[in-house]
Image (cartoon, rainbow over all chains, first blue to last red; front, side, top):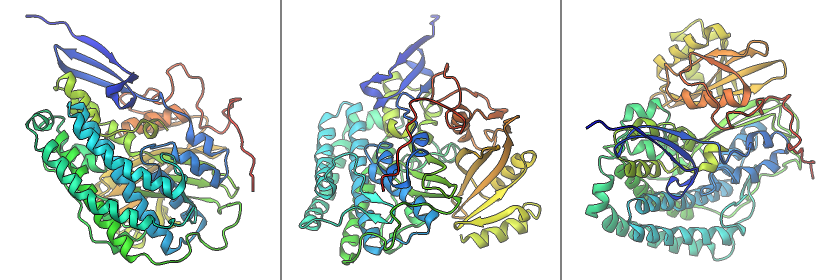
Length: 365
Length: 153
């Protein structure tokens, strides 16, 4: 029987696109033959706005990039500023940065696993993940007063020291978290329906992942063994003992499950950091009130929850960045979607999109 | 890999790129003329830079600087590759044939700077609407909605 190709528009505002993303899909029956993501609906021109603000005023803008992982953008930006201005960060501040960013990784991965779960109809797993995310957000609220946009990591250190009782609260969270992850692993990743919906779907091979610049858990699910925390070590990461979990098949199942194991590794890192941390200053000494780094350009990157998040800064010697560019892992990861979605059904397409865990604030910037 | 080692390795393998290698803020940079940018990128890819981390541009006031950030897992290193592009003829060869990752990133640079990537398979605006006028990250771009914040020290 001859069939006619159907062009379908999904989004930009549709619950299953995980943000403001439009997909133009061509379908043969229910099979996707072509998909084109149309992005930019959340483009706020943050890179242009940065050119008209002082170095310190840019930090709150970076919160609005990846809004489920604000600490990362704060940190990546601050590292680029510190490299340009030659600022040495006190050791306690580095430990606090590592702790909050590993907590942020857990919070962000709870969103990633939760969306993979809800995409496949497992709403209970989504809620179990969000219970854990809520605890991290409570920790952040106690730390800096905000639940989403923290503005916490600042050039030279962090904004506030840990409040009284925070360390104990953090230890209590880290102590219960791995068991909660194993529970989700058992009842979601071990579930026959979830396995049928996720295994063998959206297979991304390692070679394609590297060529398309995919990074983070989305690449590690395809057994690309690359994690900046270990392979381009920054801050105090060399002092910690942790593993980099890898998937083997590069399908939606492996991408989601790698995130789960990464959360358990993050707990190991946080525990070691809390043990090693000593009292001391949290902000570099003698910082000028108005930073004006010498002319030049610098790039620094960190391993965010989505992959390699880099900030490129150009200084002309004035108090404002001459140019700021954010190398967004969500943008680069999303570019591979048309490569891996073709040949799957429409309902699988949305699972594949969710398994790349894009955050459109960071895609569109 | 330390940046000095990387420079030695580049010099040993590609003597013609050696004098163009500079180190600033702990990072290596190779700045080449536009005619050689694609060949230089291909050489560095052969050397082990399997990832094109970032493509971007800077409006220097009299010309554009197109900046590529290369990453290598095997060498555990990263470096810049740069080339200058004149205002009057803002074109540069595409890197899509070497790294498909260039596809969307070059579209973004085209969108925001108006630089033409020759040979790109699908050079369209990506972040802004199709009918947008101008390229906002150029320094001469004007829009009344751009607010310059005071310093507040």
